[in-house]
Amino acid sequence: MRRRRLDRVRASDIASQYRARDDSRMAQRKLGEYQRKRGFDRTPEPSGEADAGGDGGRFVIHEHHARRLHWDLRLERDGVLVSWALPRGVPPDPGENRLAVHTEDHPLAYLEFEGDIPKGEYGAGQIRIWDRGTYDTEKFEPAKAVVVFHGERVTGRYALFRTRGEDWRIHRMDPADPAREPMPEHIEPMKATLGRLPRNDAAYGYEIKWDGARAIANCSGGRVVLESRNLLDVTPQYPELRAIGRQLGSREAVLDGEIVALDEAGDPSFQLLQRRMHLASDSEIRRRAKQVPVTYMIFDLLYMEGRTTMELTYEERRSRLEALELEGPNWQTPSYHRGEGRALLDASRKRGLEGIVAKRLDSAYLPGKRTTAWVKVKNVRSQELVIGGWLPGKGRREGEIGALLVGYYEPGDGEPGLRYAGKVGTGFTDESLRRLAKLIKPLAQDESPFDAGRVPRDAAFVEPRLVAEVEFNEWTGAGTLRHPSYKGLRDDKEPTEVIREELARKR
Image (cartoon, rainbow, N blue to C red; front, side):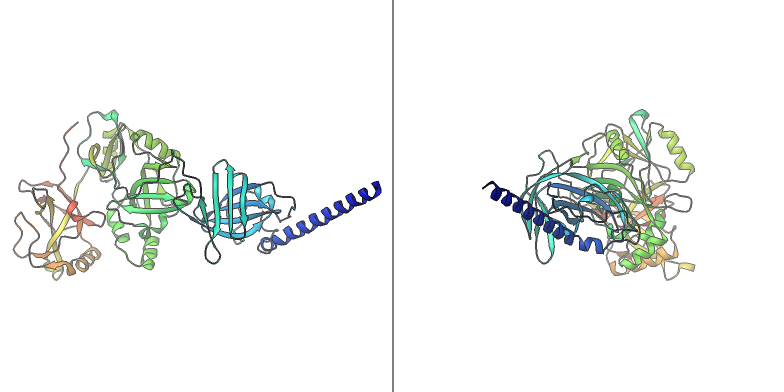
């Protein structure tokens, strides 16, 4: 009897050994695609030994800076790591399903792997562990898996499921963190009031006033969406700024800043930036991006990792912004100065810059508001004005635009009226004149759009749809510009928002 029991035990052990051997062979077969794609004499990746006993319920998420930034989710199962590439990372709340691309199984050694895959190899780029831990399995079927993560960053119940064809999605099944605030959308930038240097110098932080185009950068899952101050999506116009998302990685943030084109001296040139605005074709945008690269000057942080920062003080927001260390080939975080407003204004004047902005250190961020908490102090006066007509040129400019007729809206009891502010006849380049003629021609109309002011008799009128930036010395008593000069067109402000800027009272 005892001999029979021993024989049965030995038979069971032998069967277990065979099953383990078969499982190991099956797991090794699963790694065939992984091994075929790689040359292990050229890549630091593990060569791929399977482990039939590898069912410890571990997971790892890698941040993979390949040709396109993405995240790789790997779940330990049947001796290998079942893997998905997540182009936008793990969704933080159940409000969205994100793409999950099912990839080849990886060896268990990838649970600990970090490294740099050489250029030219499959998956070339930097790989770093973004999160790791264990998971519980509720369901694991060919077309759907439901798991509960216990990681340092990712926790909770998630589903991975196949849609049509080979497409997969990842979905958070648990409710969102109640303390998490959704990323705000379509933030209209806070505005500064024209004024003089504040009297209480120590209560302000001072920044250079960048002569460019204001833009809010919405950064999530390695992607960046740029919106102008009138909430237009300008991301396609500036492809070199998309790489900000790679530096932020999985961190969610909303940034405020100015897109500028720098001249040979490293100073912002609005005229240069004009060559990057109003472009329609992708090929032309790519060509101009090489000729006139832009830089995003970041000066505020409005949202970070599930928390709005707009109610924080300017000083606190700047501290958190600087901690991100956002510096790159086409973006930077210029420093600000506590106090010392006069010294910075003098330095900006010597460099020929537009001026500075004074911001109260204790001020919150008020979207869309123009407030005396932010004061722009200019070396040269400038004003956005609406183009309402033009005068024909003479002499060398015969047959072309000789001067633009410009105005601004005056608020009233009824509809705001467009008041004539004078003619602008200098500051044009041949290129800007050609561009203006092309844009103005289809806007021609017989009636004057101006409701007030003395307009020249030989004027040709246009619909008031275009906004120009104009430099000038001062306003005359009659409400017109003295010695105005054309700087360029603006497509980031609605004409009806253009009003005459007045100096704020001294504080």
